[in-house]
Image (cartoon, rainbow, N blue to C red; front, side, top):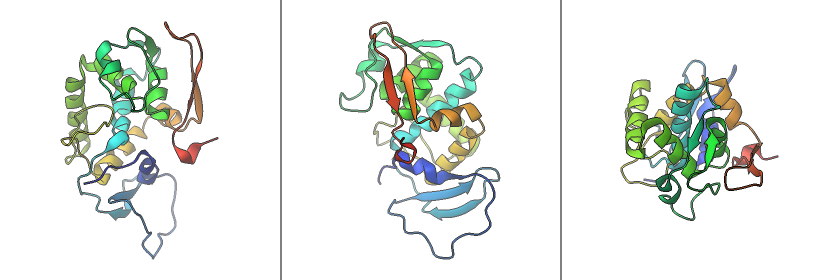
Amino acid sequence: MKKFTVSLIALYLVFGNYASVYAQEPQISAESAIVMDAKTGFILYDKNMHEQQYPASIVKVMTGLIAMEQYGDRLYETIEFSNHAVYSIPWNSSHIAMNEGETLTMEDALYAIMLASANEVTNAIAEHISGDIETFAQLMTRRARALGATNTVFTNPSGLHDPNQVTTAYDMAIIMREAARHPRLIEIMGTVRRYIPPTERQQKVRPLPNSNRMLRD
């Protein structure tokens, strides 16, 4: 079983009309893949779409979806970073160097996870919504099942590897399709660059370039 990559999010949805599908099957190196029409759910292409894989950072799509569903009308609310949120992630994993006791708005937190794949920020979002990471992961799994993603189990909000955290291309397409119902979330995902304002312990503005190579400026 292999990990998905964040860049595969681009394969999940097709917006607008389409006239034809290539007769020749595309050559895709990924173990699993899917192309789904965002409006109808029609599947234009799949490769092992129901085979369970380790999701890696595309887990953040579900984290962002739940945050948007619960705080979409109050993205100005602030979330505080606990010791556990900051220091429970591997030192060499993706982060934006938040410190214990600092705060971000939910809006800036969403930019941080969608553009910079910031793992400590996903932890802070999880704790803000559910009190702890484990409870939030259970919420993620329940929400996935409610959408029809029945082969998915989430154990953390970041996508850091856990052998028990699995999903499929089909399930992630369903989740991404639901995320696409939130224009603000899609706008955040497609932002090329965002600047995080100074925080309680950091006086400099922090640039957040989008890590999606398809959107580099």
